[in-house]
Image 1 (tube, rainbow, N blue to C red):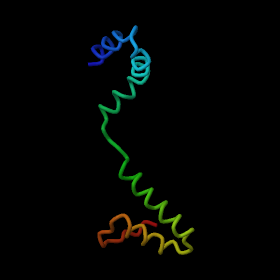
Image 2: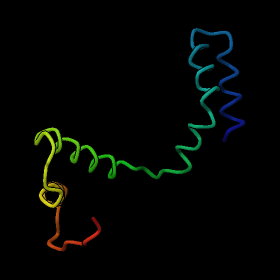
Image 3: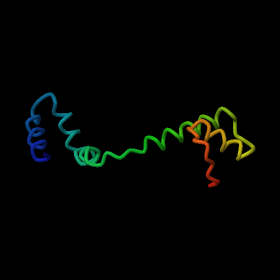
Image 4: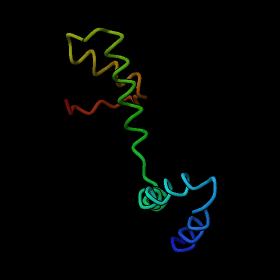
Length: 85
C-alpha cells in the first residue's frame, strides 16, 4: 500500500495540493503506525482527567483515603476495594 500512496502523492507535486502532499509524505510513517497499531490510552487519560477535576474541585484532600474513595466513586467502583495505595 505504501508504494501506491507515494506514487499518488508524487502526482500532487505540481498542483495546489503540493503542501498537503509534502505534509503527508513527512508524516507517512507515523500515520501508517496509527493504522497498524490501533491501541489507545484513552481510558487511562479519561480517568486521569476525572481525578484532576476532583482534585481541583476539592482544592486538595487532606485525607488520602477520602480522595481514594471519591476517585473510585467517580470512575465506576464495582464494590471491591483493592488495597493498592
